Length: 405
Ligand code: DI6
Ligand code: FE
Image (cartoon, rainbow, N blue to C red; front, side):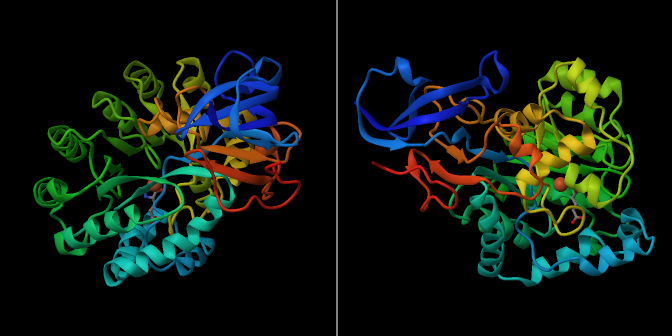
């Protein structure tokens, strides 16, 4: 006996050989919060305590946003205006604006205030069928505020939160011209106290050098924390290969990554996380090497990169559209990028990202005629319900909701 059963759903399982792993006229059962049966309705012969009629809606895995900076205080609208007048993101950062201006506001905010503002932003992720969100620290750059950000992230409600310690995001003013000392401080005085699922760094001319990142990664390995990297966003410092050397879960951005970097990622099983929102908002020209990523079989994930400076983007669905229009991903690649490969970028591929027996029952329901519509419809939200750990999240809204008989 299964706990619950969804009938009359079209399933985009994102597993198997056919496009989207699609099963039209499918059935999916859930038991103890896990998927306990998936297949065509005609093959279902078991019993379930509760039945839901999905009325022809499409069902996908709950979406995964594997790269965000969702916890922060203040905004950077003034910086946006400066950029529109011609200043570049890098110029603003070097002049003491950029990331460190958010740091000042985040240090001043209370933990409760950070939770409150992030939870308000998060409404949109919840409304768009997102089941897992990764949240980075990195706007504290001192011990107290980095830990405060991570605590705030873990307090967010309504979905699964994965936290990443991004101490090496920017150099705080108190360490001016002492980047090596700052890395030592992060390694020895913050990382040991950071409760996080992974460690990340910004490897860039305006961030940290490959050597400094390596120091951090060696320390992360000592704490048995997997690593991720903001790599090759504005220039090619060999970030992708560096991430691969440390078996990173993911290397993110990758606009300037070389073929050699892509090859190293393929060999290491490192996921490419593409962030078209930042590319768009900074009006970048250099596109990530999508063709090479495909050729070498590197899994491609897509994420919002939600942050106040380079991507004040709150929609993972719109991110799918941007991935297709700006980076020429197919709609199927875009959906894989926010399900199967997004989960892999967080090391959650055993439990999340596809509709397969044994995986967690995080599901999203959509009023659409085909799964390509998710990437096609700009700014629309066809979500009509979500199931988190086998339970319907809130009341389904809009359209013709799936209802219990
Ligand atoms: N790359 C990004 O996209 C964000 N951090 C990073 O290293 C941007 C952070 C910001 O501008 O506030
Ligand atoms: Fe980022």
